[in-house]
Image: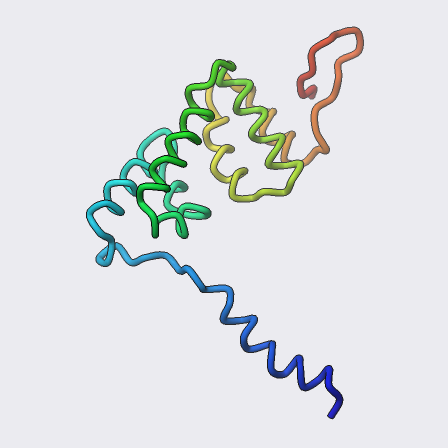
Amino acid sequence: MNRFAVTLFLIAPVAGLAQNRMPPIPAEKLTLEQKKVMELVTAPPRGPIGSTGPFIPLLRSPELMNRLQAVGGYLRFNSALPQKLVNMIALLTSRHYTQQYEWDGNYPLSLNPDCPPTSPTRSATDTGPRVSPGTKSWFITS
């Protein structure tokens, strides 16, 4: 048997186990601090998506998670930029970098009266914004 086959045979089972190094903590095993920070993260406007993705490993350090979610919340929801523009930037960035977690979190927030209904759908299927001829601003055209 060659060395490659032996190496693959020995490493393959270990690679499968590495995927679950930090699984979600069951609700009954959460500490009081972890429960408090989880309530903050899943509260509106974030919703249930706040309890998934990068928040799973961060939950092991409730203080760090609380600080990071506060910074993220401030940048996302209390920015000096108009919310419509923040939504568009979040969707375009998540689409460009193929970040499904960010898309799933921002897409529902973009479906409101301030955001044209075709914009999120168009961003999902298109390569990005189009520049309107004769203008200095960019926007997604139909």
